[in-house]
Image (cartoon, rainbow, N blue to C red; front, side, top):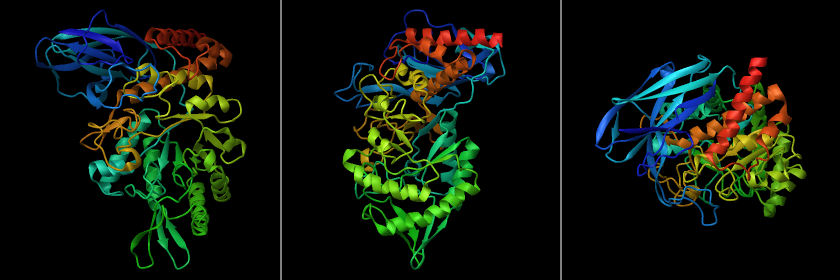
Length: 534
């Protein structure tokens, strides 16, 4: 049996060979989560047990790395910083390892390991990994310093309707809440602290005239010339999210995507008790009836927010990704939202600075490639990435990208002093425009619409829990890198940290693992030195 230890940044393919010497030591901070991988190559088919001994055994979890199909690996105009294998099977799913691990002859099997001691240990510690009758010994130097809490707001759009569809459960049923708690807990564990909240079914990625499964939290009842609102399900959602560790709530969009031309789908109980759609694709953006509805609903929602003590924890949306052609419409819709929810910040993904300069949004969220137009001009600077950030070496998390391109985010995030980050696909299990539902274990590119991995970072487990992806773990390591830089800043000041990371930006950063770890290990050593001086 041939065994080799890799960093978290390698991608282990079954048809590779394990050559050379693997890693045998790691650095980490006391409350950091350290991930690494183990490649196992065997000459016969067999099953083996995987376990750990030593100082860190009780803090170590193992996952089996499984492959998923990648059909659309990248767009034709993508840059060259991808894994050059084209379509095929790629490692991505991390399934918690229990029982025995099956090995196939002359094929490499990948194991993901994660050490999470909290603040329980410090100093040089030993970890012995046992795979069948073989042993691998590692030393882990746990530095006596603690990462600060994550300051950056991170939202990865959450699609509870996709969970209803995949698991075949009814929205708001007991099973719905159980599954959502599992998926939200996984998100929080990996740095998500803000959640897209479906006041009404979010009007995102939906074909004009089409519908997504209703997951509306706001109960609406029609009266003769008005409406009344029941926010008990919204309260249940808020309680569940707070229990999971969510700190901020991003209210779903009040107008459709790409231009704010229509109202979202809103269901209501009629005077006779019948459930019906009262607004949607047939509601024009300038509908006086919808403006009246928003004004009345706003009073109820604002009162709820204040009563729950969430005044500084909420964000509102108008429409996702408007462009110049939508400026006039967006301006009018911004007016009604500011009139109704003026004390709360409006935030939208948009990359045209004029929307912000005209005062239509409080917090613009430009894509990574457009951030220079906003840097230094916006008090609270956010950024986002999606399928559009597939070239110019911009950080992203497609399956066919090197893991470093995902993890590197933490360094430019520090340079730009980001207040927030948005990505649209935590668990989107539909094709583009939600025309069809997909099985994410069989289709990873939303029906050949987006490069594989753009639409989700978790996989639905059979028991209603979620399997993390390699990309989810690696991006979290990038968030830890950002926190480590913040810790170092507390010792040395920001200018010294900027000198250390050099001219790194979203377009310019090390593409080699060794160059990246030179920077990261320097950060560790400076933290060790300065923590000892305090």
